[in-house]
Length: 238
Image 1 (cartoon, one colour):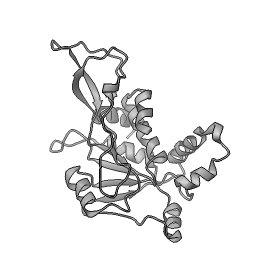
Image 2 (cartoon, helix red, strand yellow):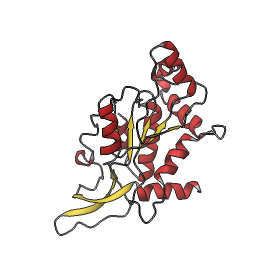
Image 3 (cartoon, helix red, strand yellow):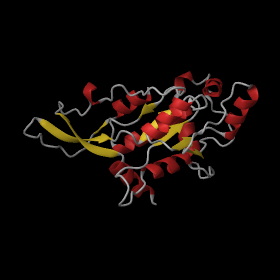
């Protein structure tokens, strides 16, 4: 599927129409932010739904007789993010699988990162649960990009903190990376449903180690492609 078609499918499928009060026209208000964005799941820190943000369109929508206008919102219950799930409890697994319907998990960590953590005794054993499918889609093929490694790697780049994010984008889209993590995840979000399926991609969870940098970049990319304003994308990342 051509990248242009993927982008349009993401915009079409991950967004949904919803009624909300008319704003002042700026398109970004405190009321347009999901509250709260975090969901409590036993043993899984930093878990949240990336949906609920308003999508800004160049096409104005006239208010309804009730003083409301119809706008697009990023669909909830499709794209979730978190830290690595090694300490997920059985109750937490039930919540993810049965209550939220998450059976597809994208792991952005490198094999080196996972192995090094396990060898040190402070690592994170792979965690899967009944009905789940873990997809190994590393951003960095043979490098440790855990939060601790990143802090060391970029300790001399305080004035150029963006360098880490540039490296993430470059590595994730490098043709030499056979896993193509961002293309794979965006392709899933652009899945064309069949007649018997709901009009949205199956829910998925994306994580790295802390669920911050690599995970944050792909979620920010998806939200930006959907037309979420920059201020809201920054809010979601934080």
